[in-house]
Length: 471
Ligand SMILES: Cc1cc2nc3c(=O)[nH]c(=O)nc-3n(C[C@H](O)[C@H](O)[C@H](O)COP(=O)(O)OP(=O)(O)OC[C@H]3O[C@@H](n4cnc5c(N)ncnc54)[C@H](O)[C@@H]3O)c2cc1C
Image 1 (cartoon, protein in one colour):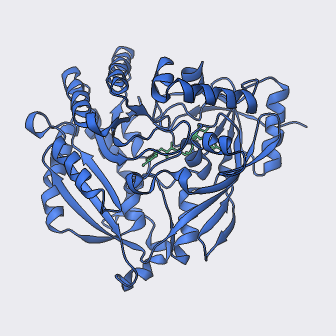
Image 2 (spheres, helix red, strand yellow):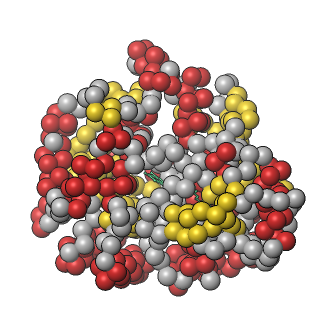
Image 3 (cartoon, protein in one colour):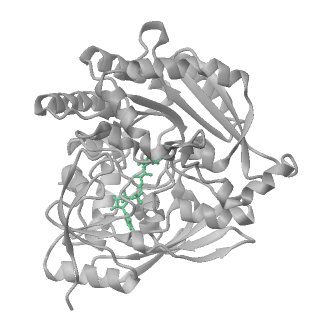
């Protein structure tokens, strides 16, 4: 049988890294198994890819094969009484909530974009703005079936192949391909959330306010103006959102209509949002991001005065989907995200040091986002009892400046690792190999490597990320 692989150049979502590959987009489990058999017979390498939303090299296999699972996107079953969905791996978060909201269910954990697939979400064990309260995506997965390198399919749950269950979730596509997954959703009593903005004057205020609210708020996320210095360093606007109790928002039931959850496609009802990125490109390339951030911060008090207000789940969660292709504003160099996860006790010191280093070296992230996290039971977890700060950098085109950015981020990662922090591979593009053991500890790495040897003895499943981190 001839498999119709297609020669393509495959990039990370941030466009800063990529490589040539032979790509296949299977539509059935049988086609996935045939692709595995073909690559096995060639003694080749293959990466699994969902929607390709990982910023760096997690779903790229330069010189090898890429299995793009986005066409395996059927919801095989949805139980409107329990809110459990059985999904193929290419089902996106958007597909999931569009089906479930009609019955009053919403995914327990969603990322900042609804484009991610459930296979990619499980593999990276993604977190939402409620990570501190409900944990990670994997905590809502009941079971899955996993195709491993030799072609066998293993059923995994908390009671069956439990070690593999806890390692494949978080295992960045190294142990096998999810073929179907059972995912629990949560009951919501309104199609809207109660949202409020709180202006935080500096980093300490930001961290303390999140800490104070985490026992009562359903969702917390803070935008940080990383251009602010001195006493204003770490200032930002924190958004809190809470679910409605039964009967609290009778009007909100109307928002169970999926069309009322989707983010608008035009601004002021006129300008297509797809036209906005060139304006953002101009701000990035003319060095005006500091000004834009200051302006955004100055709107904070007004929003705080108008709080709380009601917002659909979609509008609150998927702010980053408001401007389609916004990452193009960083063309031609693309972007990388540096997202350290730092234990609570050292968060203020470490996050301050990272920000000050960026200022000193003249490479300031255009976007900063702060979240609160809690540990989870998955082997290659990125979560800590502490905070993460996502820092987005536009990548310069000049090799000298790009190397300088990479070198600075390596130095920043040492600060984080010295403090017992972790990193998240969905966002990584640059950690060196020794960091792998420092992130997870030698025992977790040994267990992961032995599971890899059991499920994929020849190391057929590879990505540029795994080559960089695992050798
Ligand atoms: C704008 C934006 C906002 C984001 N916000 C957040 C956020 O708030 N929280 C968060 O946690 N993450 C966030 N992310 C990151 C994103 O959630 C992760 O990168 C996620 O893994 C992407 O899913 P994907 O389907 O695109 O997977 P891909 O990026 O294609 O792949 C991710 C990993 O999953 C593996 N994989 C894919 N399919 C399978 C499969 N069927 N079986 C086994 N392994 C598989 C791949 O090999 C790869 O290692 C964001 C990304 C973007 C672009």
